[in-house]
Length: 293
Ligand code: SAM
Image (cartoon, rainbow, N blue to C red; front, side, top):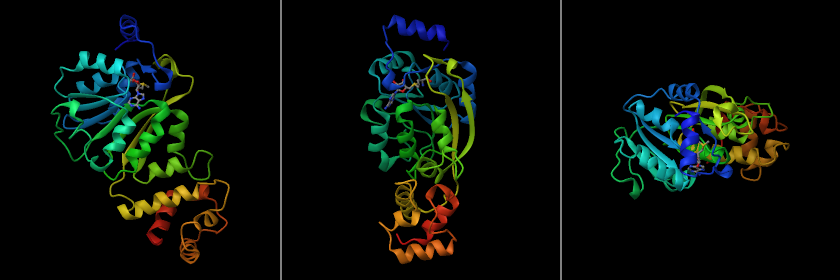
């Protein structure tokens, strides 16, 4: 879909774009193809796309032969997409808030494409065991959506998402940097960053006033922690980063007995004066294996 075509559709349908829904549409064919290539799709894949907009990415995903479930919050765009792509057998569209949908489906996320909401008809995934997220995300809800998916033990095997460059940098950050923090660790527990490329603002219509990047996150196999330990990990990192400038030991004392913390700190040779921002993912996971659940 070219920029000219996008403009014509918007004009013909009298569609005014909504800034709060992050409606910056990607019209650059090269960037769209790069995103799809990063997803490494095969025809047996099932893909969730959040925020299809006018569908430029959706069309490429469908062209690769995959099944696509797209969730669009804007009813005007959902109506347009249904008219344009609704006849394609591999395509299912939900008019919904994607974050609310994922939270509702958290318990059976194994394949969000397998048992969709009633309006999606009889869509069935051919590969219920695994699926991918490929999306040009609405920037205002990108982090909560990614955290929701990353904390779910049945999250996608791969996530290829376009978001604000600043958020992509926080996800891929190394310890002891300004970008390193809660988002890095909540996503890093189950996913590793396997690629990142910037997308110039001129590739979007209208051009966003922030920088953008596409990041690829690949699920860690096997997982670093079992499900019980992973729950401890989430509690630990949330508490440890609740006050960034404070010492981690002092913060964790709110939730865990001092003697257990002391033993774990000693075994892992973490100074009791250390702040969470200096502690790596590996040390956090080792630490959680030692703590009582
Ligand atoms: N994928 C399209 C593209 O690349 O041109 C559009 C991407 S645009 C950055 C984000 C899209 O997400 C918009 O279509 C917007 O209406 C939709 N959106 C915003 N918030 C949403 C939400 N909570 N759930 C689902 N879709 C949402």
